[in-house]
Amino acid sequence: MALIQSATAQPSTTTTPAGLNTSTADWSSYAFPSGSYGVPLTTGNILKASGGDVTVTFLGPTGAAYEESLFVVNPNPGDAGQFMDNKTTPNGTTYDLGTYAAGTEIEFGLYVDTTGNTWYDGPASRNADGAVHANIVGDYEGLADTSFVGFEDLVYPGGDFNYVDEVFAFTGTEATSSVPDGGMTVALLGGALVGLQALRRKLFV
Image (cartoon, rainbow, N blue to C red):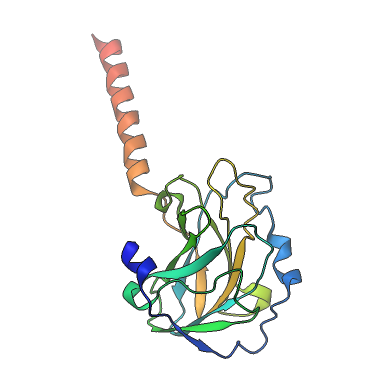
């Protein structure tokens, strides 16, 4: 991850997509998407390319106290350093991330300069605190292939988890439910089998 954060190359700026409203009124309704203050989402969605060009538009500033920036993790992480600083990026600034085949995951992260923490979109297992840090909503404002993304920048527990610390809209993407952590599933299944074996020995000894 240090390679990504230290890279100097960035996606190129482009024109803000037509019809995309960058007003804060459009994303403020997503505050506390879990329904409770300080409670993370249980499922972290991911973004997949619809097939074609993918852009990301800054929908801030949000008033977050900490300074933070977006970066692309995959694909082509070496071509995308940190960009869209939440304190200096003008509202509506749009970057072109490139053209991707349908179904390609666009994985990205948020680096919080103030704390040194890095958070990723998708399942909670990607983050050091085991919490979902990105709220991803498909068909933003009723626009096809447009996804809203709102990040939570504080560690769990401790953050408010309103997911509006830095907000974006991705075009050329679809929001998809992430697959549950396979490792956790296997661990739970293994524990259940051990318990059944112990019960069987009790009953038939």
